[in-house]
Length: 228
Image (cartoon, rainbow, N blue to C red; front, side, top):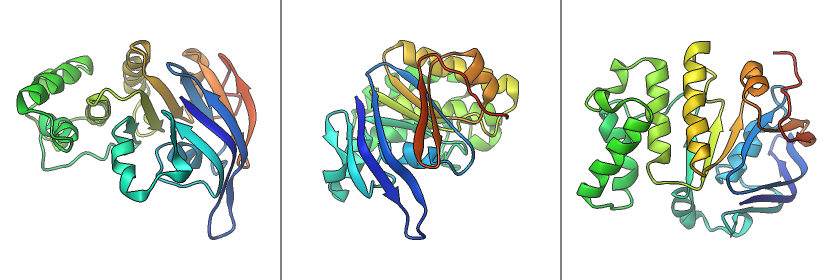
């Protein structure tokens, strides 16, 4: 599903954010990526959906070699990947329904199919009754739910989440995690970078710890392992 072999990433300022990464993530796994600030977690995440390109080494996602992927093909590749960010990245002038539908409109899904699929995923995240509202009329937790709905509406095989609970209160964070759990139980691979110690230690999954651009720990049902 996701495989990195001897992956390096060096930025123009000389910072080495990935220093010989080797990792294999199977279809259907749930993986936390943890580590101190500046350790290379975000770079690890961004390389999976080709927001960043590795300086050296091989990254395979869904059978696609990202190091050989032409820039013109990146948007098509990303249709197989759901991405959820800390800051939601919703379109403020579009309704909840329109924000989620947009992901299907760009791939020219039939309107009838779009309506059913959008309402299905809004029901999954508990926001079917707010389909006509604008993002500004929602709480932060509700906006993150819309972001999740948008990321899964294409039925991606892989879901990438970069600090998805970072801007949310604890109670809302647990609600968001329950949605991720359900998505994972339906067969989607989830890779989540997080600083949330309580979540990692309570909802146990594989933990990959990164420090100085290197994987220093890779444990099944691991713990967070850092002071929060």
